[in-house]
Length: 615
Image (cartoon, rainbow, N blue to C red):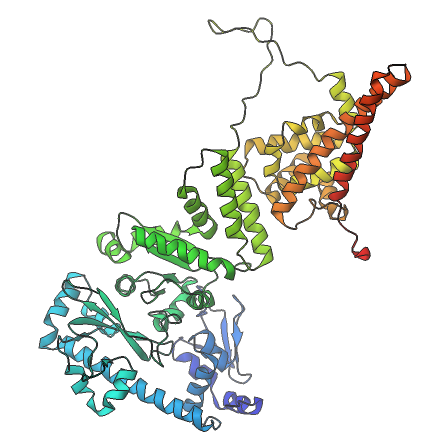
């Protein structure tokens, strides 16, 4: 089918946009335009305007903007071609001609849609009739009101093998088998698939019934029975209640995915209209993409039992390759083995809303799952935890998000396994009172002349690069604090900056780079911090925003070189003096130190970035 720009322009010209939008939004005349509270976000005063002359709508609050077709795709959630078809029918136009095969497929789909609509009406009639007394009683026990049942189109399938088949006989057995309503077994007459079950229609985004879920009323298995996949129904691409939830989700600014049909129905009855559910399977990539069209951070709500938690972590892991900047998930766990249906019936809507307010971010859910997977009491198990977290993060497709996850997990692991900070020492003062039995401790010795000499020999350029790397990766400060003690002895702003960084991180080891920079700036280190943050010009692999795991490894290597090089240089100078003074044994020591110095220089060269002009 070919939709030319001329055809689409004619369609827009024949569609009165305000009439289309007024079907679901209350518009008020405002001069030559119409205004309303925006249907795409919550607001108290109107900022959404519709202009028929120009053929577009625009919200000055959230910047939603589009024409009649975009309204149908964004607000109604229809695929583009379905949106065009609806507008064409309303405008009295005809779609461009299809080829013969496409026409045959469309006619067959039309017949299937009509059969499913008739089955939907027939099941609803049975629920309201004498045969549906048991099903109505079951709904009443679950607290589902009659108006809610009607709203969701609930029905009942009598416990008989041929009642539906007889009611829809005009469609013929072949079409009813293709629709999934009959079961065909070789050598036997086709018979009704659903028998003795509460029937729940499954609809597409246009609100057309495409399948059914059937819940058994008494004991028996399976508890739920879904339609098989058909030309109309692909369960991996379908979300239950999406047709009703999409507008509510855009208005509420969130979408909630729960485990089952009855959870959706109970939550809608409690006032949560933005709720959907997968269809007896774990959330698929296609279903996640559907959710992300409605909200950047959908909320997944799972039962607290083992099966629910397994489904939650499976969804979390499946989402990782699809993440992008701003696109994520949050997780809610229903406590005490309940499901959302139980919770809202027992404690009301406020209890469920409180759980939504405390939803866990995706990274937190993954972290807690891996921490609980096995004890982390040995070096090997701690290394295993870090490896699992890194492997999870590396499945993320977007490089920026992937690096952030690697860095986040590295920080969490470092904070978890870091030794507790030592209490600050207070030097003994003569005459100060001591507790009974307390022994006198001498004050901490001042730094030795050798320590001062090593500090003076530190390469200032490499020291700046290391400080820049530590600001990029603050968790590394605690890891290397003992080794970097000589930085405190550097005269001038570099030594003062390092000491301030240590003090800040001892106060709060969870600080990220941005928070550390802000605090340092407030403490008077703004200019030197800005200078170091321009250290991207430095030719080192650990001063930029590349691979976080590699950067922290290289930073540790650079710190070792920074501290070792002046000590080796100092020792080499003493060995050379001794050799010149006639100590023959000092020659061998001198040669060893020269080789060490060369090795340090070679290790540092490995951390220098390649010049792109030379590649």
